[in-house]
Structure formats: C-alpha cells, structure tokens
Length: 325
Image (tube, rainbow, N blue to C red; front, side):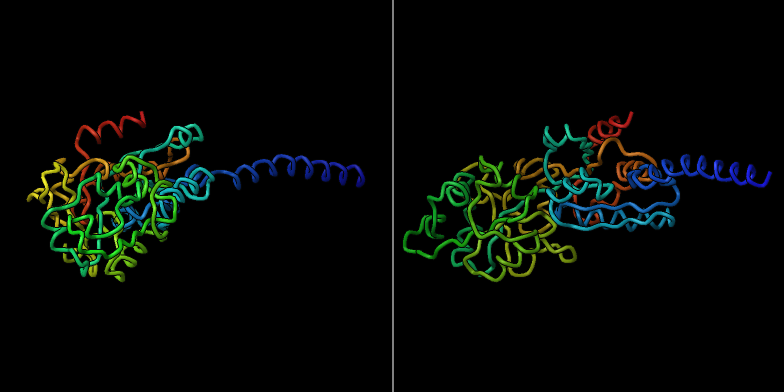
C-alpha cells in the first residue's frame, strides 16, 4: 500500500509540473504591455530626442494621478525607439518621422500625439550672422550646402565673395527623425547629408555652440531654451527664406520659441521640416499602455503648450483615437 501511495504522489507531482511549466514560461515571455494590470504597471519608453521633453512631462503628470504606474523614459533617437519597440525591449517607442511601410509590416503601430519642427542653427558669433538674419537662407542654398556640396563658404551663402570662411557642417550620426525630416525638406535622405557626424540633438547644439563657423539643425526644444524662450545659449535659429524674395520676412524671422511655435501651428513654417511626432507600439497596445496613450490623446494634450509643442487638431485627435476601434 505504501508503495502504491508513493507512486500516486510521484505521478501527481509530475502532472502538476507538466501543467505549471508552460504557464510559467508563457508568463515570462509575455510582453510588458500585456499582462500588467491597469492600476499597477511599469511602462518603458525610448526613442526620439524630439519627443523626449514632452514625454517626460506626460510621464510626470500621469504618475501623479496613477501612483501605481511607473514610467521609465530614455532618449536615443527615433531609430533606437523603433528598434527597441519591435524587438520587445520597450513598450513604447518615440518616433519623430513618418512610420515606414516595412516597419508596419513588422508590427509597428503608430499613433501621432503632437507636432514640432526642425530648425537650421548657427553659432551666435557667425561672421555673417547679421546678413543671415536679414536675408534668410533659401531651401536651394541649404541643399547646396548639405547635399550638393556646391556651397562651401559663408560668403557664398549671403552673396559676399570676399568672405571666405568655410562652413563647418554638423549632422546627426545616429538614425533619427530630425535628420530624415531635414533631408526630406532638402530633397534627400539622411544618408545624403554631409558633415561631421554628432550623436543626439544636444550633441548638435553643443558642437555648433563651440564653433563660430558651425552649421547644424535642431528640433524645436533644442534650438530654443525651455525657460527663457530665447535661442539656446551659443546658437541661433536662422530664417528660412520660404518665398525666396531675398529677405527674412517677419513671419520667417523666428527668433523666439513663441514665434516658432506660432509659425508651426498656423502652417507658415514649411512641412517638412515641421512634422508630426509619433508613439509606436508593437501591435495595438493594451492594458496600462493603452490607458496611458489614450490619456495622452485626451487630458495630456493640455500640457503641450506648456512644454513648447503644438497640439493636434480635433480632427487629427479623432483620427488617432479611431485607430483603437
């Protein structure tokens, strides 16, 4: 009898192990945005520098009203955000460009959440700064500098051949939305942009601020100071002569953050380099991640002006929300 009991116990234990092992394995492999409860969860976010300041604000405000939710946000460029999301390393990617077809085919689910723009930036001690601010620079001249390589001196830019100072071009070395959008404005792709490769938005502004002959491009919140609304110390956002009339019109001279935001909002600043910013998940989000994104498309919109971003229109918001139905 004892032997029979022992055999039954062993048999029962084996059956329980066979049942529990697959269940435990499934729990370990479940994406972070799937098994988490709506009131207690950890949400991981990575990606575009362009969206990073806004996401930090959203995370702070959302955690105040949802103390059981912990949101970890890191920057690293739009390319990193997309890669991290598709590989399952993070729940949400921040992407500062349109979502590509091949990314959608891999499961990328994009939601537009706000808008900003990329601005050409120079050192505040540029030898022809007054001319740049007075006449602006056309798209064709920017293309001649960054892509076609036919314009190499600051004198050529402002029509003063006697000025022979070379243009020191800085571009992004990391896969990013800012570079793609700036290149698209000039008729190319990120790989077509020439210059010294620098990683990250802060890297570009720092490099240009240290080089009197430097020229780069920065997202709105890295071209203008968040506290003062003036250009970041050491750099200036130079006007784009959109209509090609040879002067920087009042609507093109965007020397404060307030003016820049207004120009983007009313469509006076060209698009590109103005663009929508996206959050991306792998497949449609659920549970805590879904709640967070829906909050961003709702109450979260009221914080965008405070941080220096441009709200989506009611129609755009409705279109984004409709994606979840």
